[in-house]
Length: 100
Image: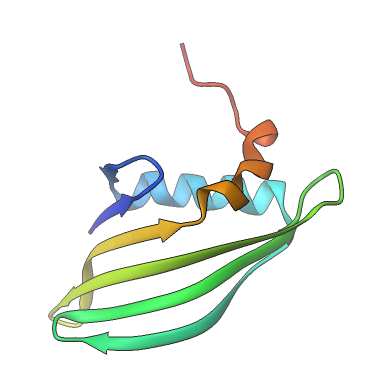
């Protein structure tokens, strides 16, 4: 599976995505995704959802996002994620600096 994010404009694999999800779940208390809508497309589906949680300093966040999924043989083969980068900036202080 290939995952593309609008915030980085690059493709990653599942392991990189899992690493991000593990980081998020370690930073946010009460992290959850709330599905708002899912609609089929000719080759998959589109899903709109909201990521919610609380930062270590007590700030509630709400990041709206959309997945465009391509499905083949009942498996997601490509996932394009579009998210509100302005809303996710509140997480920047909790990001690890890049490895040197």
